[in-house]
Image (cartoon, rainbow, N blue to C red; front, side):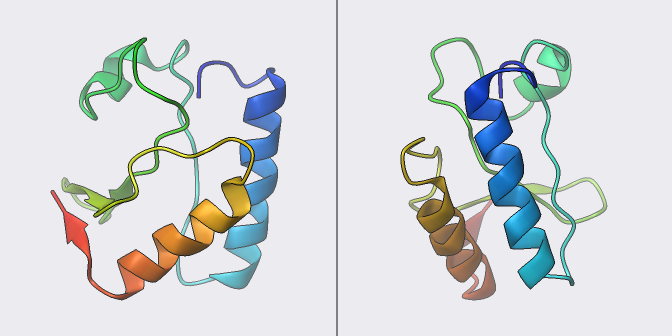
Amino acid sequence: MEDETEDKSKRVLEVLKAAASENRDLIFGYAGFKQWEEFTDSFEVDKKTKLPKIVLWDGNEEYYSVIGSVSTDETDMGSHMSRFLEGYRGGNVIK
């Protein structure tokens, strides 16, 4: 996300909260591009990247993406999150 006060960011937070309530074994969060630019660089995110971009953290030092699930269509974030979680649960991840 670029900025937590933008409308798109607020919609992402709503989707994350809904996903978290149905997936209590996972922890959901976000990092704003403006606030955490150096951190987001490690995910190959820059000003040309379609945001939001979903990544998975294993709790240690590894970060993964779900195959075919790089960035979200902002008009249907809920469905995209569902597909992301299905891909994760199915083991379709890459480092």
